[in-house]
Picture 1 (cartoon, rainbow, N blue to C red):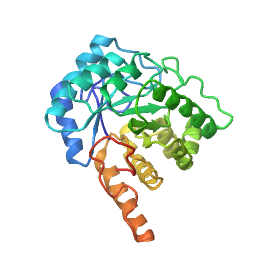
Picture 2: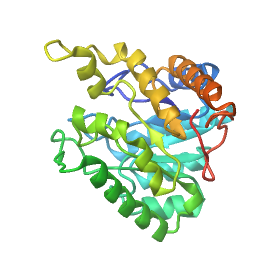
Picture 3: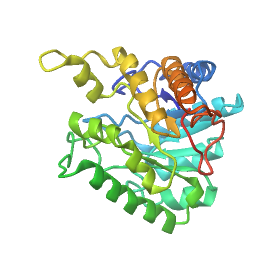
Picture 4: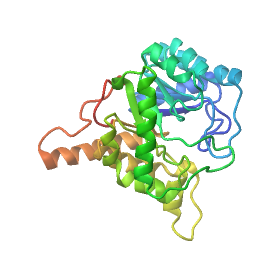
Length: 287
């Protein structure tokens, strides 16, 4: 899943693809580099970001979704607003990626259910305008699992089909470096939820902290792509359905190598050996 941020203030590439034409071109570049779907978002979710109004988000997102869909790209829309999801789906989006898992807008689940679209349910504890809110855990893996399970139940009760649900542990959202690393170390436990797994670690703060070590300053977000590729390979090995990344080529290469090593070990096709070209009916394996 390649990322196209149509925003001036995203943490890693804010402003680079703010123009519609530039955003569509970038999405096509990501596909050429190996992205199976492109995630278009018009509102930054970085800690401390100020929310944009509905009209502005629609102005940013819908033309890019329409332009990419017209080129045959499988598009997901990254939004917490039901109105944006509805208009993006009408413009050709195939999947809704809601970082709130339907909590931010009570109309989101009915909109997605009516459209029959796949829906990403991320672990979320609230908007981060005030910083890393509610990031306290006794057992981060158990608590994330329990809270995701509750959200999935709510999504299913709202009419979204079980074979249209994808789960995401929400790395970096109300979590510190230790929390994120612990979740990555236990991705296998997330499979107990019974749905495809999306891992979105690209360029995030915890990678900067790991690379900096105990004394150094974290490298800028755009210098974390090698670390992102390492996480992508680990996620592929753990059976993730997809990884969400800003720089596709390095991750595509890393996943390909991880797959080849696994095939050599088992003598059979590794999970993810078949490219995921469409959103899942319980899709298996990472791409």
